[in-house]
Image (tube, rainbow, N blue to C red):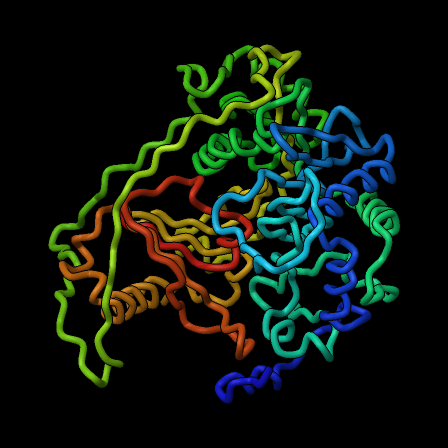
Length: 483
C-alpha cells in the first residue's frame, strides 16, 4: 500500500521499538490460519482449559458464551480479571459480515457468527467470525497503527514508548519468534496461551461464591458506579492500597493498606450498608449530585451564532441528527442473582496505585489528586481543581506537559476554536447546549512525537457523573466540565 505524501513524515519518527520477532503480517496469519472457523475457536477454548488444569475457572451463559478465568495464586477463592478467553457465540446479530453465496464452508452447530477475545497482561486480540462461522478479521491488535497499516509485510510489531498514552501492546502470543505463517495445531496454541496466562499476576480480583448472570464480569459492571463516586468524594482512605466493594451495587465498601486488611473490614461494611439487588431501594449505587453552578457577577455566556461557511473554510458542511428509540426484550439468564448475604455476596477487589506526587506548582494552583475508575475496574489518577462553573482535570501522566498558570486560557481558546470550526453543529451558540458540558483534550502529537497545546478530542453535553471518567484514557489527557 502506497503511503500518502502527507503521512511520509511518519517514517522519520525516532524511538520506535520493535517488539515482535517475525513480521506483523506473518504473526497475524499464524494465528488466523490456526483458528479459521468459530468451531476452531471453541476447540481452542477447550484445549486452553485443559492446558491450564486446576488454575482455570470456566463460566457459562445462555448459548455458546464462555469465559475462562485464572484462579488468584494467592487465594483461589478469587479470580483474576479480565478473563483470559472470552468466547462470544451468540449467533449472527448486528453488523455481521455475510460471505459470498458461492463460498464453500464447513457445516456444524458451531459454524455461526461469533468472536473470541484473548486477554493477557493488559493486551487484547479479538478474532471475529462472519455469519457462517468463518474468520473475517482481527480487532484490538495493538502496536503502532501506522506501521501495522503500511509496513506489516516488512516489519515486526513496533511501539512508541514515548507516546502519551503509550502504544497499546500486542498480545504476547503475537511476539513469538517461532510463529509459522501456515498456522499451528490448536493444542500448541493452547499450551502457549496457558504458559503466558500463568505469568499474569496483576489486575483486579473477582469473588463469586455463586454463578452470576453474565458471569463474574457483571461484578465490575455493578460496582464501578459506586467505586467512582466513593473515590471522587474522598470516601476512600488516601493511604489505602486495596479497595473492596460488593458486587451487587457497590454500596458496601472497605479499604486497607493490604488486601487482608481491606477484606477484614468488608464483612462489617456489608452488615452496615446491607446492599441489595439493582431495582430495589437497597440496590441503589452511591448517590452523586452535581453542585449548583456559581455564576460570577458580570459573567456572560459564550455565544457563537452561526455564520455562513465560506469557500476558504473548506466549503459547505451538512450536519445530520437522528432521534429514535428501540425496545428489546429482557435478558433472561441461566443464573439468578444470589441473596444479599455475606456468604454469597459477590465482591470486587481493586489494587489502588500510589497517588502521584503533586508538585508545588500544581498545589498552589489549587489542584489535588483524585482517583478515577477504568472500564475494567482498574484505577488511575488525575489532578482536579474546582472552578466556579465546574471542574478542570489534568491526567497525572501528562501533568509534566502542561503549565497550570496558562492551562485555563489554553482550554478556553481551544473551546472557542472548536465551536467555531464546527459552527453548523451549534446554530444557537455554545450556551444553547444542555449542561453539564464535558470536553476532552489531548496534549500529545502522536505523529510529531512532541507535546502540543490542548486539542479537543471529544465533546458531550447533557450530563456528568464521575463514572463517565475512564482511567485507561483520561489519565493521559485533560477534561473540562462546565455545569
